[in-house]
Each structure stands twice: as structure tokens, then as C-alpha cells.
Length: 153
Image 1 (cartoon, rainbow, N blue to C red):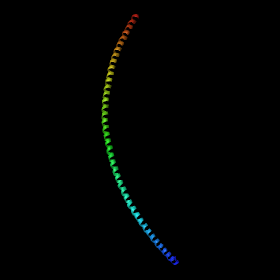
Image 2 (image 1 turned 90 degrees about the horizontal axis):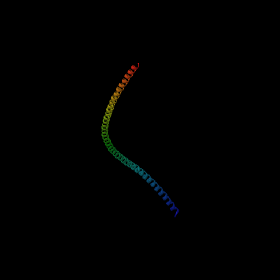
Image 3 (image 1 turned 90 degrees about the vertical axis):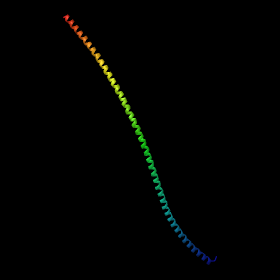
């Protein structure tokens, strides 16, 4: 190649390189700006969608938790009411059983006391009779001794 042609080709190459470099740099800048804008827009859209989805899920979970809480409260209240009724009935049965046992015990105690009183009365009568007999015997012995002492004196 001729030196003059070579110089023109080199100049054209430099000029094309400069122009292409400027055009590529500008395109890169525009694409970078567009990419950043799209990224920002997409981030905002995703953040909004995610926030909306989270809010919706939280509300559904809160509703479900409240429903379960209400069902559990109703179940526990029913179980407690049923247990209270059974316990009240059992308490009444126990009170009646205690009354019956107390009455039987009192009747048995009264019968025992009456029996003891009868036996004490019988014992008192027997002891009284024996003491009277004993006193009579002692008086008779005393009279005999006095009679003997008067004879011997």
C-alpha cells in the first residue's frame, strides 16, 4: 500500500474509531440510564406487589387466627360448662350421701347411748341392791357383835 493511502486509511480508522467510541459510550450511557430507570421502576413495582401480598397474607392469617381463637373459646367454654354441671350434680349426690351417712351414724350413736344408759341403770340397780344387802349384813353382824359383847361383859 502506498504511504499516502496508508495515511488516509489510518486517518479514517482513527476518525471511525473516535466516532464509534463516542457512539458506543453514548449508547452505553443511555442504556445504563434506562437500565437504572427500569430497575428503579421494577423495584418500586415489586416492592408494591410484595407489600400488597404481605398485607393480604397478614389479614388472611389474622382472620384465620381470630376464627380459630373463637372456635377454641367456644369449645373450652362448652367443656367448662359441661364439667361444672357434672361437678354440681356429683356434689349434690355427695351431699345427699353425707346426709344419709350422718343420719345413720346419729341413729347408731343414739342407739348406742341408749344401750349404755340402760346398762348403767341396770348396773346401778344391781350395785344398789348389793350395797343394801351388804349394809344389811354389816348391820346384822354389828348387832350380833354388840349382843355378844353385852353378854360377855
